[in-house]
Length: 435
Ligand code: NAD
Image (tube, rainbow, N blue to C red; front, side, top):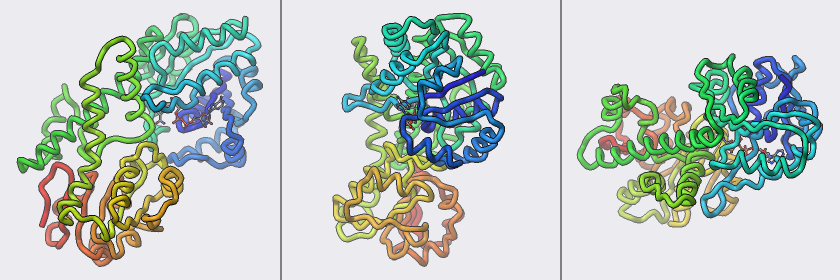
């Protein structure tokens, strides 16, 4: 099939490359000439394992191109997939300005029947709004499809090529069938539904996963007080098939470009129909507070006085294997430390430049080149992202680097056995502290 993907970010780029991998003819469009320049030079503007190689193979095979020319891409395609951003407005609602603009541009370029599919996460009713926008600008025929995306950054290629399910919201059966055909090579589990239900499935899924995370984090907080170990609790819960083991990992809470934004948006969506989503409000509140778990521990260790202490921070991305720092808990934790007079040394294997861009280049933070340099001379070390390289660190060398052997593990990366016999004072989340 001939496909145009509009928006070449984390979702659009991975999807476009994977559709090409399936043998389709794909053109990826972005309005950012910088991104398209990098892609046309054989680079990849984001960090996503395996993407560079797959993009390059498909370009060489002539199935994948990149352009800023949206109109040309639309004219040459049968299916147009929208994957532009829907960032949050200050109210928590999704900002649909990019969607609206792209829809208008698509309408003005249309030269015959198109399927217009929306992969961006959009509030219920948005596909209808897009259809109205297009209809107001062109007489050309088209069909609307809601095609919510469930990939995770860091394992995006695997998630795209081996999805748990594909959801297709369609009001036109033949367009729905075409989309089923496009995705059939990926999975048999394809849920075809009406457009509004498809839009809702995406929000409900993310809200449920966020709920699981906040739930286990609250259990962890109680475990700390009653002397239980949340990792064993989660294991014991997870074997129950009604519960399942996924997303029962206690830590300092979720971040990223999806869960925070989508939970806020769903609260707003419910509010617009006079429904107060109390459970989800609490999930958001618990998550917001959980990142301060690290701060509370530091304050307890330093008798409430952070001023003058050197705190090393490992991990700035909101999760490992991505350079995405949007809504990363590290932003607020480091801001708090700096504002309270601590000297912060920070490091992340791939997210340093994105983090510095978002955090600002103000004083108080020393940006380091590797994990041990970060730890050198620090009075405490906080691990905020569970990158493999932190889990594999030589604890002897780490001990030599630190001024004081205080280790606060916000992601429960280290095992008790590896720390026994050392003088590390070790705190994690929902597990007994050591020494
Ligand atoms: P992103 O910000 O990384 O990328 C969006 C891209 O769209 C940008 O490169 C921007 O320049 C481009 N763009 C905006 N308007 C355009 C226009 N008119 N024409 C051409 N390009 C345009 O966003 P993302 O993280 O890929 O997310 C995209 C959507 O997918 C969002 O709605 C998000 O909620 C959803 N989603 C994201 C993820 C994820 O893990 N990132 C997962 C599932 C769903």
